[in-house]
Amino acid sequence: MSDKLTFRKAWKKFWEPILGLGFFQWVIAVFMAIPIWLSYFTSIKKITNIEVFYKYRKKPAIFVFWHGRSLMLSPLICLGGMHAYAVASRHKDGRMMAKLQHLFGLRAIYGSSHKGGVSVLREGLRVLARGDHGICMAPDGPGGPSLRVKEGALYFAKMSGAPIIPVCFTAKRAWIQDRWDKYLLALPFNKIVYNIGNPIFVPKRATAEEFEKIRKDLEDFMVAQMRELDAEFGLPFIEQDMKSSAYKKQKREAREAKKANKKKGK
Image 1 (cartoon, rainbow, N blue to C red):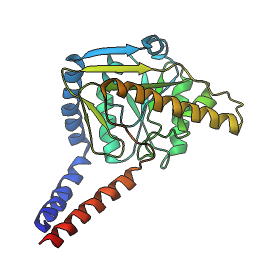
Image 2 (image 1 turned 180 degrees about the vertical axis):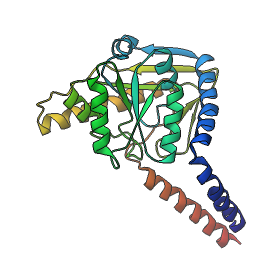
Image 3 (image 1 turned 60 degrees about the horizontal axis):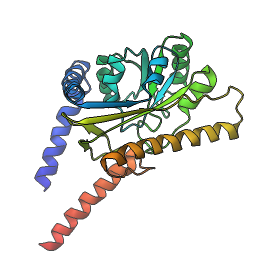
């Protein structure tokens, strides 16, 4: 076991600096884009409320989706001719995902609710003020808590007058990754179902109570939106309130407990 851990640490130390290099991030992004297109073009697609997407694809709007339900939205954005920027984490993983999104036509605004929040808000408002571009963002990213709407998207909407449009997808044949956000990957030769919600506006003079009610209503809608889609294919229940740090801690403690039990059994 110690040899395995030592190898894992050495492998991680070897790859982490390489994965931080822009050139390798582009290479990985290209290889990630190939299976996404394969899954999209070999699958049957069903899109509900597509007229909302077409209405706002080249207008100032904030498209929101759960962090674990982002990947198969990229082909829809690309083929639909959407003009938008995506909010991405400054972390190397976020930068690599931004490069992947760039291949589908999305530009990046770097930052998060924890780091660079003010600069993200300022840059996002500039994008929306142009009148021909929207913003795409996961309100529970980049580290959770899962399925909880943070206030960033609502501030964009309140200060710009642009609507919030909740979007989600699911798939009949899905690989749900063992992560805090239960990231869903749609397999090839599949059935992929998209749902686009109606626009939600935040009044510029909304009180704190009204603001919180809109936030909670949006959160409830997005959770119900995902649950209804997943229920069609009997996918596992995704829990709320899981943070990336807490999930990693749970996994680490589980490994340590398993290791301790093995020692006791000897």
